[in-house]
Length: 150
Image 1 (cartoon, rainbow, N blue to C red):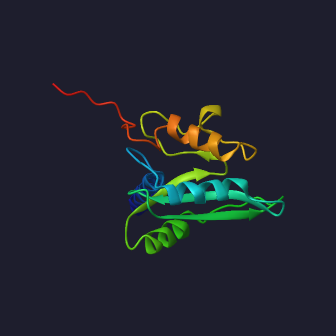
Image 2: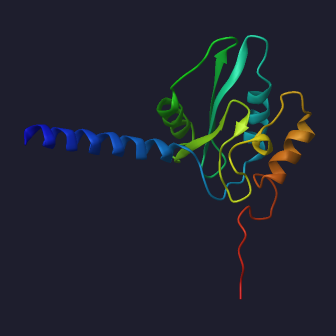
């Protein structure tokens, strides 16, 4: 009887921590400020010794934080820490993960968050990156979610 109870509790804890992990990724409407776009471009470019790893943004689109990996090494973790740092830098605004490496993971009804359509090349010009962000609904005045009014 005790083994069943412990097994049940273990499975419950395991499932609840997995459910929380999914809430780190942003979803829904997001418009990035020009300042955050500049920092995202800086993040994407990296350099010879640094490779983009994680980019977090506040849900208002005004705050950000990013991490690099040393080139040639595999990074892991850091999700919780980057969100805390982003929130502090954003004066308490809630932050979510926007990109991993050079793939925009934020799902907004246009961006699927995976695949070729969500990837940005570090070789693109600033204008090409801004065009891609506009195409994916993260820049510009129009809503990234389709709505109808009657």
